[in-house]
Amino acid sequence: MSTSRGRAAGHLQQTDGLTEDQQDLLKLVREFVNEQIIPVANELEHADEYPTQIVEGMKQMGIFGLMIPEEYGGLGESLLTYALTVEEIARGWMSVSGIINTHFIVAYMLLRHGTEEQKRKYLPRMAAGDVRGAFSMSEPGCGSDVSGIRSKAVRGDDGTWTLTGQKMWLTNGGSANLVAALVRTETGADSVYRNMSTFLIEKRPGFGETAQGIVVPGKIEKMGYKGVDTTELVLDGHRTDDGQLLGGEPGRGFYQMMDGVEVGRVNVAARACGVSMRAFELGIAYAQQRETFGKKIADHQAVLFRLAEMATKVEAAHQMMVMAARKKDAGQRNDLEAGMAKYLASEYCTEIVEDSFRIHGGYGYSKEYEIERLYREAPMLLIGEGTSDIQRMIIGRRLLEDYKLSQ
Image (cartoon, rainbow, N blue to C red; front, top):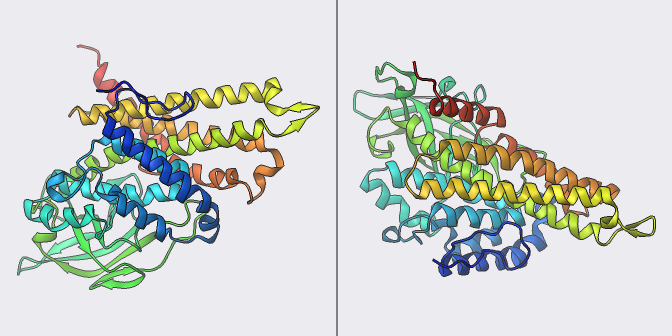
């Protein structure tokens, strides 16, 4: 293990104990972000344009197969390496990291819960970026309350399944060609959660009817998080079979999805760390350029204190995210740490972005300045993969488990 650090300059967001391979990969990603993402992010975001060239570049670097084992054509890297890669990409443009996240969750669920046939069918093409994944739990009437799902799959006398219902908030919903969707399968279990299953739905990229019984109406217009497509998914009598049932047996979908969301929360924490770092970089640079009352605004104590608080939050969130990733890599339960990391990083991100926005003054309100985009992107991280309130519930319940009073 090398004791070299992960970033080339500055003290913030350093990661001790990275191998040379990890350092080389992160250096490559950082160069790609600086040269290929940051210069075009604002223009693409304002146009709400899908970053096709950026995605192609990530395919060539193997990022779509980062955590897929080598036997399936991936790089076989750790969750930590993946999280640090996402942190770098989100620093350039948070929407791009969203394209990776949903794809990764589907690949992770396949790897952990899929049949061998399903793994061999999809993982090599996912590693190459030819199959792009999206996953779907939410519906118009429910978000984090998964027990409220109404979409269902009914098994026919011939053993096939028919899916009906409406899903909501699919990142990559239009561009993906494989969707992991959670639906009800009323198989008589005594728990609502054991009456849910995950189906792997193949479709064509695009909008309208993209497969038999599958309709993607169009992009949902959003205040931020543009470029990446967020959509609904209408299941209108989609017919499928047990071969597309994740794991091959019904009733396991809820637990499969929760496993995916757990690592997804580490991802969202990493995205928040990336956006925070960029906001800090923009704020501290502007503070050394802008002059008021005869001196740089960084020399005013009020601004200096603000920069100090921003940097402290950037560092704290990064280290908590790294700890959550390493715990998962060690094969340990990490729902507490993932919840804490996601909660802290997303809340701090909002605060850091607002502080940078304040440092920019009136210019921060202009679309010519990058901080305006970050100001609209940060709120999504407060709600993605479970709201801050949901994270607090998870954290609180786990603490009561750990510190339960003996009778």
